[in-house]
Image 1 (tube, rainbow, N blue to C red):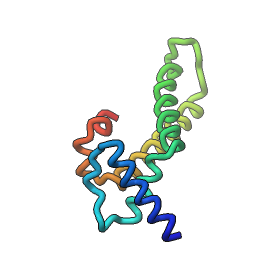
Image 2 (image 1 turned 60 degrees about the horizontal axis):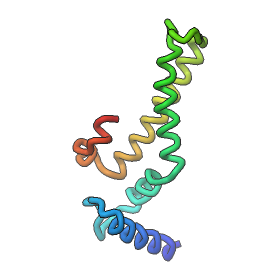
Image 3 (image 1 turned 90 degrees about the vertical axis):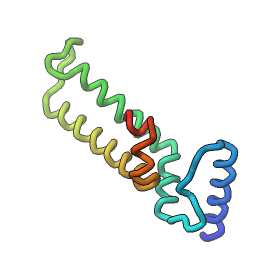
Length: 114
């Protein structure tokens, strides 16, 4: 409802002030689509998917041929897992870019390192 959306926006403003972070892209003409992307990026599920996909990609390096650990998986399993994790990370990155915009992402250190 409109009241709930207004309440969430007010809570967002209070949260920004408490965290003392720079949210330069928020203004009175705030786009509802970007607000939804902001809410998605700050959910536990988003962060969990990000960590699981990243760790899975790193773990795949340990079992890639020639595996040093003696663990060997079929090539189709390895390829499917790698492609799936890269797809998940690409979607998550796309959502983050929709929220922040490409200009901010170029200068955000954690985003650049990732």
